Length: 472
Image (cartoon, rainbow, N blue to C red; front, side):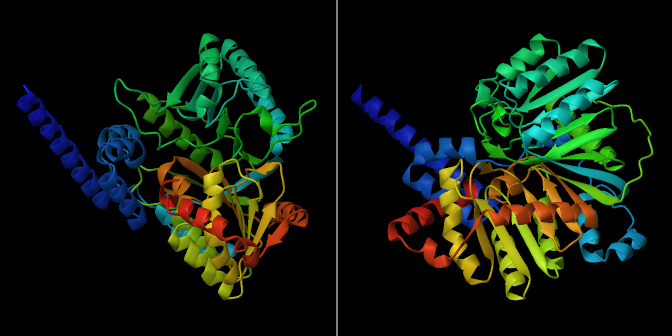
Protein backbone atom coordinates (compact mmCIF):
# COMPACT_ATOMS: atom_id res chain seq x y z
CA UNK A 1 0.00 0.00 0.00
CA UNK A 2 2.78 2.39 0.96
CA UNK A 3 4.56 1.49 -2.27
CA UNK A 4 1.47 2.46 -4.29
CA UNK A 5 1.27 5.81 -2.53
CA UNK A 6 4.95 6.44 -3.20
CA UNK A 7 4.47 5.63 -6.90
CA UNK A 8 1.47 7.98 -7.11
CA UNK A 9 3.40 10.75 -5.36
CA UNK A 10 6.36 10.28 -7.71
CA UNK A 11 4.04 10.36 -10.72
CA UNK A 12 2.40 13.56 -9.51
CA UNK A 13 5.79 15.21 -8.92
CA UNK A 14 6.92 14.15 -12.38
CA UNK A 15 3.70 15.52 -13.91
CA UNK A 16 4.11 18.86 -12.15
CA UNK A 17 7.75 19.11 -13.30
CA UNK A 18 6.74 18.30 -16.88
CA UNK A 19 4.02 20.95 -16.77
CA UNK A 20 6.53 23.47 -15.38
CA UNK A 21 8.99 22.70 -18.18
CA UNK A 22 6.26 22.97 -20.82
CA UNK A 23 5.17 26.29 -19.30
CA UNK A 24 8.75 27.59 -19.43
CA UNK A 25 9.01 26.61 -23.08
CA UNK A 26 5.68 28.31 -23.84
CA UNK A 27 6.90 31.50 -22.15
CA UNK A 28 10.14 31.46 -24.16
CA UNK A 29 8.29 30.95 -27.43
CA UNK A 30 5.46 33.41 -26.91
CA UNK A 31 6.59 36.26 -24.64
CA UNK A 32 7.77 39.27 -26.69
CA UNK A 33 9.76 40.73 -23.78
CA UNK A 34 12.72 38.63 -22.55
CA UNK A 35 12.33 40.08 -19.06
CA UNK A 36 8.76 38.83 -18.92
CA UNK A 37 9.76 35.40 -20.22
CA UNK A 38 12.65 35.15 -17.75
CA UNK A 39 10.41 36.16 -14.85
CA UNK A 40 7.87 33.44 -15.65
CA UNK A 41 10.61 30.85 -16.05
CA UNK A 42 12.05 31.70 -12.64
CA UNK A 43 8.61 31.55 -11.02
CA UNK A 44 7.84 28.16 -12.60
CA UNK A 45 11.20 26.70 -11.61
CA UNK A 46 11.00 27.91 -8.01
CA UNK A 47 7.29 27.13 -7.55
CA UNK A 48 6.38 24.54 -10.20
CA UNK A 49 2.72 23.98 -9.36
CA UNK A 50 1.90 27.53 -8.31
CA UNK A 51 3.88 28.95 -11.22
CA UNK A 52 1.93 26.89 -13.76
CA UNK A 53 -1.41 27.96 -12.27
CA UNK A 54 -0.37 31.63 -12.20
CA UNK A 55 0.83 31.43 -15.79
CA UNK A 56 -2.49 29.97 -16.93
CA UNK A 57 -4.33 32.85 -15.26
CA UNK A 58 -2.00 35.79 -15.89
CA UNK A 59 0.60 34.74 -18.41
CA UNK A 60 -1.22 33.58 -21.54
CA UNK A 61 -1.87 36.91 -23.15
CA UNK A 62 -2.79 36.15 -26.75
CA UNK A 63 -6.22 35.39 -28.07
CA UNK A 64 -6.63 31.79 -29.16
CA UNK A 65 -7.46 30.76 -32.70
CA UNK A 66 -11.15 30.35 -32.05
CA UNK A 67 -11.33 33.88 -30.67
CA UNK A 68 -9.38 35.19 -33.65
CA UNK A 69 -11.85 33.61 -36.05
CA UNK A 70 -14.75 35.12 -34.15
CA UNK A 71 -13.08 38.56 -34.09
CA UNK A 72 -12.63 38.27 -37.84
CA UNK A 73 -16.21 37.17 -38.38
CA UNK A 74 -15.22 33.55 -39.09
CA UNK A 75 -13.28 34.75 -42.13
CA UNK A 76 -9.67 33.88 -42.95
CA UNK A 77 -7.22 36.14 -41.13
CA UNK A 78 -5.93 38.24 -44.02
CA UNK A 79 -4.27 41.60 -43.81
CA UNK A 80 -6.79 44.27 -44.84
CA UNK A 81 -6.09 46.34 -47.88
CA UNK A 82 -4.10 49.47 -47.15
CA UNK A 83 -5.84 52.64 -48.34
CA UNK A 84 -3.95 54.58 -50.97
CA UNK A 85 -1.91 57.47 -49.60
CA UNK A 86 -3.51 60.88 -49.69
CA UNK A 87 -0.69 63.07 -50.92
CA UNK A 88 -2.74 66.23 -50.56
CA UNK A 89 -3.46 65.58 -46.89
CA UNK A 90 0.13 64.59 -46.14
CA UNK A 91 1.49 67.66 -47.88
CA UNK A 92 -0.99 70.04 -46.27
CA UNK A 93 -0.30 68.73 -42.75
CA UNK A 94 3.46 68.25 -43.10
CA UNK A 95 3.23 64.96 -41.26
CA UNK A 96 3.89 62.63 -44.17
CA UNK A 97 5.93 59.96 -42.35
CA UNK A 98 3.51 59.74 -39.40
CA UNK A 99 0.44 59.62 -41.65
CA UNK A 100 2.06 56.92 -43.76
CA UNK A 101 2.98 54.83 -40.71
CA UNK A 102 -0.48 55.01 -39.13
CA UNK A 103 -2.16 54.23 -42.44
CA UNK A 104 -0.07 51.09 -42.85
CA UNK A 105 -0.51 49.76 -39.30
CA UNK A 106 -4.25 50.48 -39.06
CA UNK A 107 -5.29 50.02 -42.72
CA UNK A 108 -7.66 52.93 -42.09
CA UNK A 109 -7.76 56.24 -43.96
CA UNK A 110 -7.24 59.63 -42.41
CA UNK A 111 -10.63 61.32 -42.78
CA UNK A 112 -11.36 65.04 -43.05
CA UNK A 113 -14.32 67.19 -41.95
CA UNK A 114 -14.43 65.96 -38.35
CA UNK A 115 -15.42 67.94 -35.28
CA UNK A 116 -13.92 67.43 -31.80
CA UNK A 117 -15.19 68.93 -28.55
CA UNK A 118 -13.24 68.21 -25.33
CA UNK A 119 -15.26 67.49 -22.19
CA UNK A 120 -13.37 67.66 -18.91
CA UNK A 121 -14.43 65.39 -16.06
CA UNK A 122 -17.81 63.81 -15.57
CA UNK A 123 -19.52 67.10 -14.78
CA UNK A 124 -19.05 68.13 -18.42
CA UNK A 125 -19.05 64.74 -20.14
CA UNK A 126 -21.91 62.85 -18.48
CA UNK A 127 -24.68 65.43 -19.16
CA UNK A 128 -23.67 65.51 -22.84
CA UNK A 129 -23.66 61.72 -23.04
CA UNK A 130 -27.01 61.39 -21.28
CA UNK A 131 -28.55 64.03 -23.55
CA UNK A 132 -27.30 62.17 -26.65
CA UNK A 133 -28.84 58.93 -25.34
CA UNK A 134 -32.08 60.78 -24.64
CA UNK A 135 -32.23 62.02 -28.26
CA UNK A 136 -31.47 58.61 -29.82
CA UNK A 137 -33.95 57.49 -32.45
CA UNK A 138 -32.36 54.41 -34.03
CA UNK A 139 -29.51 52.71 -32.14
CA UNK A 140 -27.10 53.14 -29.21
CA UNK A 141 -23.83 51.35 -28.52
CA UNK A 142 -22.03 51.74 -25.19
CA UNK A 143 -18.81 50.02 -24.14
CA UNK A 144 -17.13 50.74 -20.81
CA UNK A 145 -14.50 49.00 -18.72
CA UNK A 146 -16.33 50.03 -15.52
CA UNK A 147 -20.05 50.87 -15.43
CA UNK A 148 -21.08 51.49 -11.82
CA UNK A 149 -24.83 51.64 -11.14
CA UNK A 150 -24.36 54.07 -8.25
CA UNK A 151 -24.77 57.82 -8.61
CA UNK A 152 -24.65 58.97 -12.22
CA UNK A 153 -24.56 55.33 -13.33
CA UNK A 154 -28.19 55.05 -12.30
CA UNK A 155 -29.05 57.92 -14.64
CA UNK A 156 -27.35 56.08 -17.51
CA UNK A 157 -29.34 52.93 -16.70
CA UNK A 158 -32.59 54.92 -16.71
CA UNK A 159 -31.82 56.64 -20.01
CA UNK A 160 -30.72 53.44 -21.73
CA UNK A 161 -33.83 51.62 -20.52
CA UNK A 162 -36.05 54.50 -21.65
CA UNK A 163 -34.43 54.43 -25.09
CA UNK A 164 -35.02 50.67 -25.31
CA UNK A 165 -38.68 51.15 -24.38
CA UNK A 166 -39.25 53.72 -27.14
CA UNK A 167 -37.91 51.35 -29.77
CA UNK A 168 -34.22 52.28 -29.94
CA UNK A 169 -31.86 49.33 -30.46
CA UNK A 170 -29.52 49.43 -27.44
CA UNK A 171 -26.33 47.39 -27.04
CA UNK A 172 -24.05 47.55 -23.99
CA UNK A 173 -20.74 45.80 -23.31
CA UNK A 174 -19.17 45.80 -19.84
CA UNK A 175 -15.78 44.22 -19.22
CA UNK A 176 -15.75 40.97 -17.26
CA UNK A 177 -13.19 42.25 -14.74
CA UNK A 178 -14.39 45.86 -14.74
CA UNK A 179 -17.86 44.78 -13.64
CA UNK A 180 -16.38 43.46 -10.40
CA UNK A 181 -16.29 47.07 -9.18
CA UNK A 182 -20.02 46.87 -8.47
CA UNK A 183 -20.40 43.11 -8.32
CA UNK A 184 -22.17 42.88 -11.68
CA UNK A 185 -25.20 44.81 -10.41
CA UNK A 186 -25.21 47.20 -13.40
CA UNK A 187 -25.40 44.30 -15.86
CA UNK A 188 -28.21 42.66 -13.93
CA UNK A 189 -30.20 45.91 -13.64
CA UNK A 190 -29.86 46.66 -17.36
CA UNK A 191 -30.93 43.16 -18.34
CA UNK A 192 -33.87 43.28 -15.94
CA UNK A 193 -35.07 46.39 -17.77
CA UNK A 194 -34.73 44.81 -21.18
CA UNK A 195 -31.41 46.31 -22.32
CA UNK A 196 -29.22 43.97 -24.38
CA UNK A 197 -26.14 43.86 -22.13
CA UNK A 198 -23.16 41.55 -22.55
CA UNK A 199 -20.01 40.85 -20.55
CA UNK A 200 -16.61 40.85 -22.21
CA UNK A 201 -14.60 37.68 -21.41
CA UNK A 202 -15.98 37.03 -17.91
CA UNK A 203 -13.62 34.79 -15.89
CA UNK A 204 -15.26 31.45 -15.16
CA UNK A 205 -14.46 27.84 -14.33
CA UNK A 206 -16.98 26.11 -16.63
CA UNK A 207 -16.45 26.39 -19.50
CA UNK A 208 -12.90 27.40 -18.51
CA UNK A 209 -12.02 31.05 -19.05
CA UNK A 210 -9.37 31.81 -16.44
CA UNK A 211 -7.34 34.57 -18.07
CA UNK A 212 -7.87 37.92 -16.35
CA UNK A 213 -5.75 39.73 -18.91
CA UNK A 214 -7.18 40.56 -22.35
CA UNK A 215 -9.56 43.17 -20.98
CA UNK A 216 -11.80 45.42 -23.07
CA UNK A 217 -10.51 48.76 -21.79
CA UNK A 218 -12.27 50.82 -24.49
CA UNK A 219 -14.68 53.60 -23.55
CA UNK A 220 -17.00 54.28 -26.46
CA UNK A 221 -20.52 55.68 -26.78
CA UNK A 222 -22.15 55.94 -30.22
CA UNK A 223 -25.65 57.22 -30.92
CA UNK A 224 -27.38 56.79 -34.30
CA UNK A 225 -24.06 57.09 -36.10
CA UNK A 226 -24.27 60.89 -35.73
CA UNK A 227 -22.42 61.50 -32.46
CA UNK A 228 -19.73 59.67 -30.54
CA UNK A 229 -17.77 59.93 -27.30
CA UNK A 230 -14.24 58.56 -26.86
CA UNK A 231 -11.85 58.91 -23.93
CA UNK A 232 -10.57 57.29 -20.77
CA UNK A 233 -13.57 58.01 -18.56
CA UNK A 234 -15.46 55.12 -16.98
CA UNK A 235 -19.07 55.58 -15.85
CA UNK A 236 -18.50 56.10 -12.15
CA UNK A 237 -19.70 58.65 -9.58
CA UNK A 238 -16.05 59.38 -8.67
CA UNK A 239 -15.78 61.42 -11.89
CA UNK A 240 -18.31 63.99 -10.66
CA UNK A 241 -18.68 66.57 -7.92
CA UNK A 242 -21.16 65.26 -5.33
CA UNK A 243 -22.65 66.74 -2.18
CA UNK A 244 -20.03 66.61 0.57
CA UNK A 245 -17.72 64.61 -1.74
CA UNK A 246 -15.06 66.33 -3.85
CA UNK A 247 -14.07 65.17 -7.32
CA UNK A 248 -12.01 61.99 -6.92
CA UNK A 249 -10.90 61.26 -10.51
CA UNK A 250 -9.91 63.74 -13.23
CA UNK A 251 -10.39 62.62 -16.81
CA UNK A 252 -11.19 63.61 -20.38
CA UNK A 253 -13.78 62.56 -22.94
CA UNK A 254 -14.08 63.94 -26.46
CA UNK A 255 -17.35 64.38 -28.35
CA UNK A 256 -16.97 63.59 -32.04
CA UNK A 257 -18.93 64.30 -35.21
CA UNK A 258 -18.18 63.53 -38.82
CA UNK A 259 -16.71 60.70 -40.90
CA UNK A 260 -14.60 59.38 -38.00
CA UNK A 261 -17.84 57.88 -36.65
CA UNK A 262 -17.81 55.30 -39.44
CA UNK A 263 -14.48 53.94 -38.16
CA UNK A 264 -15.71 53.99 -34.56
CA UNK A 265 -18.89 52.19 -35.58
CA UNK A 266 -16.79 49.46 -37.18
CA UNK A 267 -14.94 49.06 -33.86
CA UNK A 268 -18.30 48.64 -32.13
CA UNK A 269 -19.49 46.11 -34.73
CA UNK A 270 -16.27 44.08 -34.37
CA UNK A 271 -16.46 44.07 -30.58
CA UNK A 272 -20.11 43.04 -30.59
CA UNK A 273 -19.32 40.20 -32.97
CA UNK A 274 -16.38 39.15 -30.82
CA UNK A 275 -18.50 38.99 -27.65
CA UNK A 276 -21.72 37.55 -29.11
CA UNK A 277 -20.85 36.00 -32.47
CA UNK A 278 -23.67 38.08 -33.98
CA UNK A 279 -23.32 40.12 -37.15
CA UNK A 280 -24.72 43.57 -36.43
CA UNK A 281 -25.16 46.14 -39.21
CA UNK A 282 -26.25 49.49 -37.72
CA UNK A 283 -27.87 52.00 -40.04
CA UNK A 284 -25.71 54.86 -41.24
CA UNK A 285 -27.39 58.28 -41.42
CA UNK A 286 -25.31 59.52 -44.36
CA UNK A 287 -25.13 63.03 -42.91
CA UNK A 288 -22.66 65.62 -44.16
CA UNK A 289 -20.67 67.29 -41.42
CA UNK A 290 -18.20 70.08 -42.11
CA UNK A 291 -15.33 70.30 -39.65
CA UNK A 292 -11.72 71.38 -39.59
CA UNK A 293 -10.10 68.28 -38.15
CA UNK A 294 -8.46 65.25 -39.75
CA UNK A 295 -8.97 62.11 -37.66
CA UNK A 296 -8.30 58.39 -37.63
CA UNK A 297 -9.26 55.63 -35.19
CA UNK A 298 -6.49 53.38 -33.85
CA UNK A 299 -8.09 50.26 -32.35
CA UNK A 300 -5.63 47.81 -30.87
CA UNK A 301 -5.85 44.49 -29.09
CA UNK A 302 -3.94 41.30 -28.32
CA UNK A 303 -5.45 39.54 -31.35
CA UNK A 304 -3.38 41.84 -33.56
CA UNK A 305 -0.04 40.67 -34.98
CA UNK A 306 1.34 44.20 -34.75
CA UNK A 307 1.37 46.45 -31.68
CA UNK A 308 -0.40 49.30 -33.43
CA UNK A 309 -0.49 51.85 -30.63
CA UNK A 310 3.19 51.46 -29.86
CA UNK A 311 4.11 51.74 -33.54
CA UNK A 312 2.11 54.96 -33.92
CA UNK A 313 3.47 56.45 -30.69
CA UNK A 314 7.02 55.78 -31.84
CA UNK A 315 6.32 57.39 -35.21
CA UNK A 316 4.70 60.42 -33.53
CA UNK A 317 7.59 61.01 -31.13
CA UNK A 318 10.09 60.56 -33.97
CA UNK A 319 8.20 63.25 -35.94
CA UNK A 320 8.33 65.82 -33.11
CA UNK A 321 10.22 69.02 -33.94
CA UNK A 322 9.93 71.04 -30.74
CA UNK A 323 7.66 69.39 -28.13
CA UNK A 324 6.26 66.09 -26.86
CA UNK A 325 3.74 66.23 -24.03
CA UNK A 326 2.37 63.15 -22.35
CA UNK A 327 -0.30 62.92 -19.67
CA UNK A 328 -0.97 59.41 -18.37
CA UNK A 329 -1.98 57.79 -15.07
CA UNK A 330 0.39 54.82 -15.51
CA UNK A 331 3.82 55.21 -17.09
CA UNK A 332 5.81 52.06 -17.79
CA UNK A 333 6.95 52.65 -21.37
CA UNK A 334 8.43 49.70 -23.27
CA UNK A 335 12.11 49.93 -24.03
CA UNK A 336 11.52 51.19 -27.58
CA UNK A 337 9.42 54.14 -26.41
CA UNK A 338 11.73 54.80 -23.45
CA UNK A 339 14.68 55.07 -25.85
CA UNK A 340 12.75 57.21 -28.35
CA UNK A 341 11.70 59.70 -25.65
CA UNK A 342 15.25 60.00 -24.36
CA UNK A 343 16.60 60.43 -27.90
CA UNK A 344 14.05 63.18 -28.56
CA UNK A 345 15.01 65.02 -25.37
CA UNK A 346 18.73 64.71 -26.15
CA UNK A 347 18.10 66.17 -29.62
CA UNK A 348 16.59 69.31 -28.09
CA UNK A 349 12.87 68.46 -28.19
CA UNK A 350 10.98 69.60 -25.08
CA UNK A 351 9.68 66.29 -23.67
CA UNK A 352 7.30 66.60 -20.72
CA UNK A 353 5.55 63.76 -18.88
CA UNK A 354 2.78 64.49 -16.36
CA UNK A 355 1.92 61.79 -13.83
CA UNK A 356 -0.39 61.66 -10.82
CA UNK A 357 1.37 62.38 -7.54
CA UNK A 358 -0.69 59.65 -5.90
CA UNK A 359 -1.77 56.61 -7.88
CA UNK A 360 -4.62 54.17 -7.33
CA UNK A 361 -2.21 51.29 -8.14
CA UNK A 362 0.78 51.63 -5.83
CA UNK A 363 2.85 48.82 -7.36
CA UNK A 364 2.58 50.33 -10.86
CA UNK A 365 3.46 53.76 -9.47
CA UNK A 366 6.51 52.45 -7.62
CA UNK A 367 7.68 50.54 -10.71
CA UNK A 368 7.46 53.70 -12.82
CA UNK A 369 9.54 55.62 -10.26
CA UNK A 370 12.44 53.25 -10.91
CA UNK A 371 12.94 54.46 -14.51
CA UNK A 372 12.25 58.16 -13.94
CA UNK A 373 15.79 59.17 -12.83
CA UNK A 374 17.27 57.90 -16.12
CA UNK A 375 14.65 59.82 -18.08
CA UNK A 376 15.25 62.99 -16.08
CA UNK A 377 19.02 62.67 -16.58
CA UNK A 378 18.36 62.52 -20.35
CA UNK A 379 16.56 65.87 -20.18
CA UNK A 380 12.92 64.77 -19.90
CA UNK A 381 10.71 66.92 -17.67
CA UNK A 382 8.70 64.88 -15.16
CA UNK A 383 5.85 66.53 -13.28
CA UNK A 384 3.61 65.19 -10.54
CA UNK A 385 0.01 66.34 -10.64
CA UNK A 386 -1.73 66.81 -7.27
CA UNK A 387 -5.05 65.06 -6.43
CA UNK A 388 -7.69 64.32 -7.47
CA UNK A 389 -6.26 61.27 -9.20
CA UNK A 390 -5.44 62.12 -12.83
CA UNK A 391 -6.75 59.41 -15.17
CA UNK A 392 -6.40 61.40 -18.42
CA UNK A 393 -4.51 59.88 -21.37
CA UNK A 394 -3.08 62.43 -23.82
CA UNK A 395 -0.20 62.62 -26.28
CA UNK A 396 0.40 66.04 -27.87
CA UNK A 397 3.10 66.54 -30.51
CA UNK A 398 4.16 70.07 -31.49
CA UNK A 399 1.18 72.29 -32.33
CA UNK A 400 -0.98 70.14 -34.62
CA UNK A 401 -1.17 66.51 -33.43
CA UNK A 402 -3.06 64.86 -30.55
CA UNK A 403 -3.81 61.28 -29.50
CA UNK A 404 -6.62 60.71 -26.99
CA UNK A 405 -8.50 57.64 -25.86
CA UNK A 406 -8.33 54.75 -23.42
CA UNK A 407 -4.70 53.61 -23.60
CA UNK A 408 -2.20 54.05 -20.80
CA UNK A 409 1.53 53.85 -21.43
CA UNK A 410 2.24 50.44 -19.95
CA UNK A 411 2.49 46.81 -21.00
CA UNK A 412 -1.16 46.15 -20.24
CA UNK A 413 -2.53 48.84 -22.57
CA UNK A 414 0.10 48.42 -25.27
CA UNK A 415 0.00 44.62 -25.40
CA UNK A 416 -2.77 42.99 -23.35
CA UNK A 417 -5.91 45.10 -23.51
CA UNK A 418 -8.38 45.98 -26.23
CA UNK A 419 -7.87 49.74 -26.50
CA UNK A 420 -9.20 52.59 -28.63
CA UNK A 421 -7.31 55.78 -29.45
CA UNK A 422 -8.14 58.53 -31.93
CA UNK A 423 -5.44 60.62 -33.56
CA UNK A 424 -6.22 64.14 -34.74
CA UNK A 425 -4.49 66.76 -36.86
CA UNK A 426 -5.88 70.17 -36.03
CA UNK A 427 -4.21 73.31 -34.69
CA UNK A 428 -7.25 74.50 -32.73
CA UNK A 429 -7.92 71.21 -30.94
CA UNK A 430 -4.19 70.88 -30.22
CA UNK A 431 -4.23 74.38 -28.74
CA UNK A 432 -7.11 73.40 -26.46
CA UNK A 433 -5.23 70.33 -25.25
CA UNK A 434 -2.01 72.33 -24.85
CA UNK A 435 -3.87 74.95 -22.79
CA UNK A 436 -5.25 72.17 -20.59
CA UNK A 437 -1.77 70.75 -20.09
CA UNK A 438 -0.40 74.20 -19.24
CA UNK A 439 -3.09 74.66 -16.60
CA UNK A 440 -2.19 71.29 -15.10
CA UNK A 441 1.53 72.12 -15.14
CA UNK A 442 0.84 75.37 -13.30
CA UNK A 443 -0.44 73.47 -10.26
CA UNK A 444 2.00 70.54 -10.56
CA UNK A 445 5.59 70.24 -9.37
CA UNK A 446 8.65 69.18 -11.31
CA UNK A 447 10.62 66.20 -9.99
CA UNK A 448 14.41 65.93 -10.08
CA UNK A 449 16.42 62.72 -10.03
CA UNK A 450 18.00 63.54 -6.65
CA UNK A 451 14.53 63.57 -5.09
CA UNK A 452 13.84 60.08 -6.45
CA UNK A 453 17.22 58.77 -5.24
CA UNK A 454 16.97 60.19 -1.74
CA UNK A 455 15.99 56.93 0.00
CA UNK A 456 17.78 53.63 -0.60
CA UNK A 457 14.95 51.46 0.67
CA UNK A 458 12.45 53.21 -1.65
CA UNK A 459 14.85 52.63 -4.54
CA UNK A 460 14.99 48.92 -3.68
CA UNK A 461 11.18 48.80 -3.42
CA UNK A 462 10.79 50.57 -6.76
CA UNK A 463 13.33 48.32 -8.48
CA UNK A 464 11.64 45.20 -7.11
CA UNK A 465 8.29 46.35 -8.46
CA UNK A 466 9.89 47.25 -11.79
CA UNK A 467 10.99 43.61 -12.22
CA UNK A 468 7.30 42.76 -12.62
CA UNK A 469 6.58 45.65 -15.02
CA UNK A 470 6.06 43.39 -18.09
CA UNK A 471 3.11 41.85 -16.26
CA UNK A 472 1.67 44.83 -14.35
